[in-house]
Image (cartoon, rainbow, N blue to C red):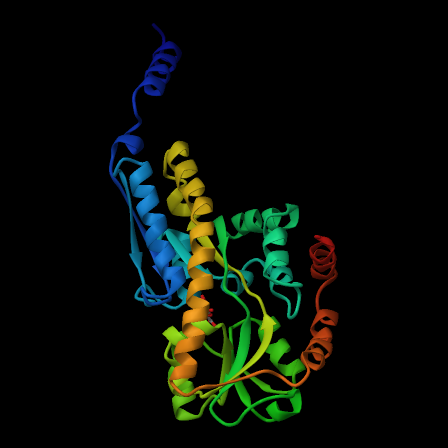
Length: 324
Ligand code: BDP
């Protein structure tokens, strides 16, 4: 028998036997910024449970909540070289690496939540999810994150002019700073984990986020005015590390990818329930929840942000708007 024949035989046998990767127990680490009672963190646990069950206990995902593995910027760096295996992050964090993703998080982009989900499940959504591969990530699925609204510690905001001169914490991406500038406020790009103390010390007058996060982050304790501007819908994204996951057997990768997609309905339901709960909790604690005078005024101002985008983003936005 020559070497070629031996090799062919060995490869044939290895198709019959479980590969070493399949037989071994696999432990993966998933990073999450939120505390464990946040609906998104609850879904991370459900995802881990599903993967464990479907793999007969062989694949174990350890969920690390409360940013213990770092803020999102650093988590993504660690994902790139395989120091962390998976993460649930805001799409904004990944958009810093994959600029096209900004098209999915433009101000007042979606007609409503259902429109966003139809987009995320359409060709353009699927293409953009897959495009994170270019930066060394594996795009697993999107999650719901509601609508983000403005809050502050100073006064009730009803119109954009009420915001004049206020310093508002934003996520670390030019698009977010531009959105806040378009309303006439001063953007302060900052890691999420530094926002509470920025609000408490007055370095920031306000910030913006969805109600569940406003509640679980305790920001409502230091910013008592929440105005329902609903200016951004930023999907969450679950990403894997290409460096780490490419070592898995293809069938295990498929199992993980399916479980991520299957857990989306759970997340959306958990989100809906917690959005109502957190609205009630912040109101009960004395936060003034305010409807803006005319939502249209905010939308008109944000149109400037669209004009600043590259032709590629503008073309993607057209496709997004055309999704029925
Ligand atoms: C929350 C997202 C979280 C972001 C945070 C932020 O769930 O991933 O990091 O906003 O504003 O809604 O940075």
